[in-house]
Image 1 (tube, rainbow, N blue to C red):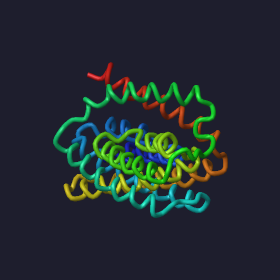
Image 2: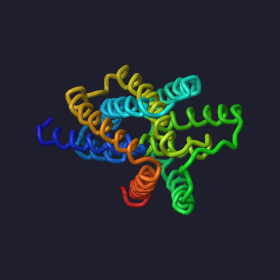
Image 3: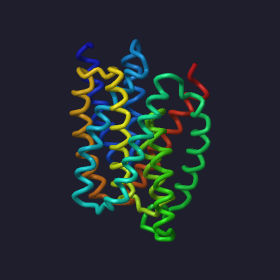
Image 4: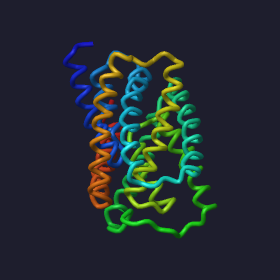
Length: 256
């Protein structure tokens, strides 16, 4: 691969890591750029390669969050185990079928979520406690399986969907939702990587430089998110959801 392409991919990975650390959605930058700059490679190879920088940035972001945000380890471990398995299954399906049929559905869902988040100014600004522990566990299991499979099969916007799920279903605020989402996203990336490594589809000469840059972006992004708090994360969340809508809108209506 030409050195200028690798440099561009690495810079992209840095910004993707930063955004992903704040509120998820780094794949919205990293994935399309990767597909554009590596057009002659199979999609599964590109996606598999990009999973390495994704897990790298998520790992460093998670470490920063863990220093400042309390995690219920029993609760999150259950979610991570389920998310790993479902992401593995999603990536397995990706190697044999296309995922384009899901994008129109996601376009509608994201549009409704954006309107709700924008109109509800208090959304995610503080924790809510209107659900029992049993209800939280049920929602956590559903969230882990559905989003885990989504990340393995489709990918872009996974972190944002997780943050949304933690807020709407589990009653977290933006900061705690982002921290917990990082842990689950770590598991989904791991599940996909296990599959792609077993298939031998990862290009390590591209993945490693991108991973270093993504990790740096994740490290800085997490520090900024922790320092600035819920309001800052909410603004970033809205921006990323809009970007996700544009991405899926392009795939649905304009992409040939």
